[in-house]
Length: 292
Image 1 (cartoon, one colour):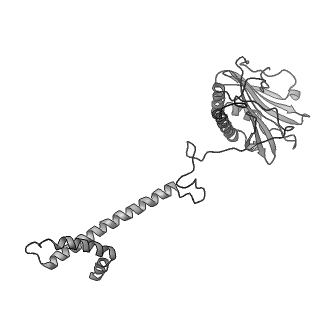
Image 2: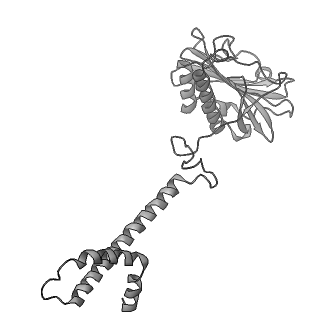
Image 3: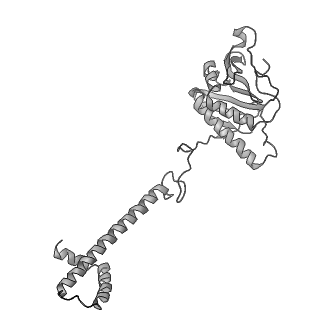
């Protein structure tokens, strides 16, 4: 380094302050024997430059650490920020948790509501539990039913009711796990002409019981509903996708797709949870195949 550069650094306010303080301390010391005044001064300069270099490195590290921490936590002012000094909460796999909207259907358009243990007089904790279950159910419906069903919505005041909305139509979906300790374990297909009653197949569940999967005519017979029915633990389970009568569109779910849905591990996990911790009250079963 040139002498002029050294002189400029030494004339900086911070350097002058440190040098003045060191000078006051060093001034009281007796120079070692045999050393000239210039050598003592040069030694002091080298020590000062060393201290300034170390201090600058420490300061730079502190600034970088502070910047890195800010980048992780966020300032709460940028797009997608979760508030000052926070980051958005995420699901267990690191992805943002999904929240499915709730819609209200008109009384004439909605199927009969299904009561839950928390429908009247339930505790806040119970309502939160049922709502969390319904959100997880909506996620499974969205992920495992065919894309033609569209986006999934929760139906207000209907624990087992959901609505799929797509450009082709709106489809009422029922996912019901209702306590029925004495319900029949096996399902059978109805006898009769297939053309009139639709189609019915039996699939075997992991526990060995049978489930019926049907595609049946609705209304004037020009549209069809797809449903599955089975018994699990102490509950009757019914999953169905209804047609959109207003557009004349059948349920966009085939029998094979419904069979694959009810056999999916994620679906059976939900059924087991609702069987152990009911979200619906015992009563009239919506399991259309229970008595077949």
